[in-house]
Length: 639
Image 1 (cartoon, rainbow, N blue to C red):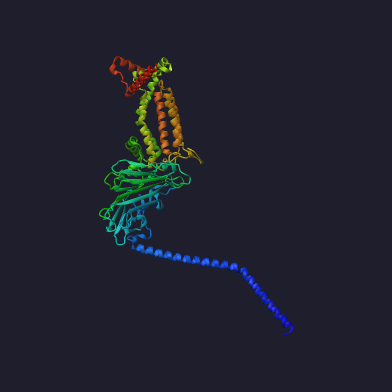
Image 2: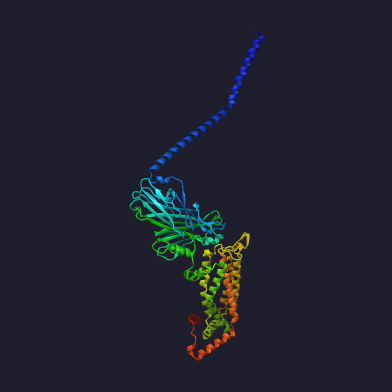
């Protein structure tokens, strides 16, 4: 080979050596990246393998569960599609869901909500009702099972629970015509082998969120209650759910719970003007558990109410377990009429769900105010005029008591000169007891009782309190406007603002202000007519200031109350002012004193005409004499 060939071979060899060295250096440099890539690949393969294994395991579990379900007596009801059947009688529309076979929605087309649509008492997500049956090997929980609707009409449906060879169970619903009553009969058919011979009862669980339906949250929440009627009792009782102090993050306050040891005829979840009532023909058994919780404002709900009870159940199916529901207004007459549709042995007295006050006040409402209100309402007058007429009529009925109270005060004012003479005879403080005795003796001589003005005034108190319970519960006033008030059952807020003021809120109720003003004027007139009893000046002055402070407390308490109630108190106070002015101008204290003197002179000449001291006066005199005896005895001990 020549020289050029040797040089060529040498260059080719150098190139090969350089390539080998560069290739090894490149492999060393990329080895970590390759290892990292392979590691990620292995992780991905492992994850995919695990996911595949989990999918296979899940499929195996589902297969096992499916095989288990197929062996369950309740297999036909474990899976299905939810269906809804609507019952409608013109007054109420009730949806019955096939999942659980319970009411899932109630609408009252005859009543409007605040937005102008029909009132909805509850929807599917706001109620949870469950019937539980104890079986031999497994229990039936209706809320977890799918029923089949059969025999569907516009007012009735049978929800049937099919089993796997153990018969079936029917939930038979029927909506009564021209009423708010829904009947429910639960009957087992051919299920003897499913239940044990010791099964005699079923359990009822009922939980519901009660919607805010009215304008004022606080006022409506105050009248939203869980009410129940004990068997063989004519009156209903309440489970109070007071607004307890709660953290800002808590939705509900601490629950109020109660276990009723007596059987119950019915349990009501009551809004201010609408109720959901569940009745049992055979009574809910003793030891029913009731509970309630209060929501905060802004959630759209007022309270959450709960019931847990047991009821009679025949597993052989010879007798059905009979229930009834009332989904309707808290109208006293409507509740009374629907009570007649009860299938129970005793009187349902659904109208007891409306709280008409304490015993005496309740009777005033039942036998005086409610009949009068119904009579005036039938004249198709504006509800503001109805309240005005009721106030005037009631004022005329209690007028004799008011006149007697005024005349008692007028007689004491006429005898004031004699009382001043006695006070002048005993100016010393240690003679206060003697001065008071002489004054009381003088009043007794003329047949005047210092307490005569108080007792007739107390007669008016039951009427005043009866209106306090009647007006906020009168559904006839709901969404009825008068003057500047758009709803007589809520507060009038013609004057309002955005910033919340403690004790007042975001509005000023004009009717509440008028009520308080007339109350102050009435107090001023009454204080001028009162005769100061010697020895009781300090006590009477204290009472005077308390009477003047009372309207201030009324303002803070009634600013959020029903405008119809404040309107009544305003009209009542105005009529009282007019009456007092008329009585003041129509009486002459000089003539009253002359008549008292004439009566006293006649009694001296003829003792048979002498006026005997009233029982109250006799007791006061006896108390004063006993007090004087004790003081004299103490003085002798000190000496």
